[in-house]
Length: 289
Image (cartoon, rainbow, N blue to C red; front, side, top):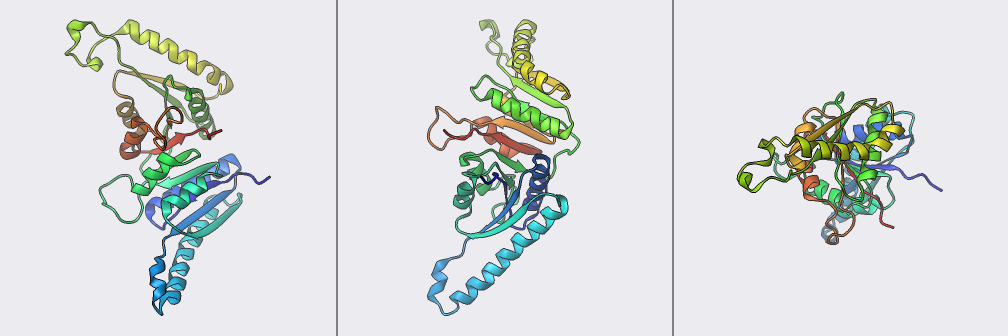
């Protein structure tokens, strides 16, 4: 049985180069093969003209050069792992989603070619991160490589799976894990016009902290070498995690894999992180049965 690979998308941009670098290091950590994929969209309408085949050959040669350069870079980063490159024709999002069906993890850069330079997330990365059938990492090259791993902790059915991933990532990187829990305290009616983050609620905070400690306990026991820092906040989860991302190397969040509209596999917190975080984002997703 063939071992599932980490798949990384490349298009020759600086953003995808950062993704290849991250994916190669991650494959080396996990002792997994790496598959480097470049998708190019050739317009078959061009074949109506005499120059169609020549144009196709040139286009494919350029695309294969992009794949080859990315594979060379990955081998320089992680020479001990198995690495293969593939150049495929098609719509980028559709082909990468097809790749996700058999991948251990799919890794993307935050920006591709085209679009507006000011946007922090490309449309392909957003669509793949939202709809992929496996876990996804979107890489930014402005994270802190020496920083902690951060994780958003809630009461969803996937919380344990998210924590397991986050502890494993922190252990592999020999760094601190920052566990972030956001909640809105119950306020008396006479404080209805006051922001929740401006109110001191020590008793409620202690209850939430105790609940979080209970969730963390089995994973602390499994990974005793991982130092854990707890951040309890009345801010929104996305806002708190974006703040933590300024000093982190990776933020781990869960996806909405059950009980939602078809295709809506990423909640608002995940989407806001994809657009605004300052480091790599790991979206933990359990495969459908």
